[in-house]
Figure: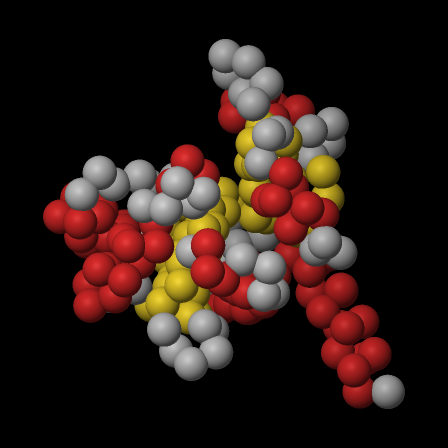
Amino acid sequence: MLKKRDLQECQSLYNLMVDPAVFPYVRNKSQSYEEYLFTTKQLIVEEEQKTCITRTILNDVGHPIGTIDLYNIVNKTGFLATWIGIPYFGQGYNQRAKEAFFTELFLEHPIDTIYMKVRIQNIRSKKAVEKLPYAKLANEINQQIYQSVNKEQQKYDLYQVDRSDFLACCSVMQYEVAT
């Protein structure tokens, strides 16, 4: 479902990213394949420097279909960026990718809180985040970060996932599956 980023998948990912239904919502927009290749190289270096964690999302047969990143990692927190190509919309990949990534982040890395800023007009992403039982709207509970992501004008809702909430929810889900 997830793998470390490598340059061999860049052409496939670039072709998915430039779709007009996807491109406006991608954090690291690239205007050309060469620029996408360069950006991917930068992300791999940032991961080595521990300021970013980046993964490729794979479909059920192992083909790259999108990316998921934790960026601006500071004080055990970071921001999430995810995109999936349009042929894979509505198939559950987004939620499965987030759950796999959060599991890695909270169990293998020193991350305590993941923030997600979602454009107010991006209804698809808002619905996807609101399906996650461990994510909470943080506009009120974390006003300083909410205001920092909305400097000029309100464009984003802020959500957060805390390690304790995610792990408690996963424990309940595992218990329900086992019984």
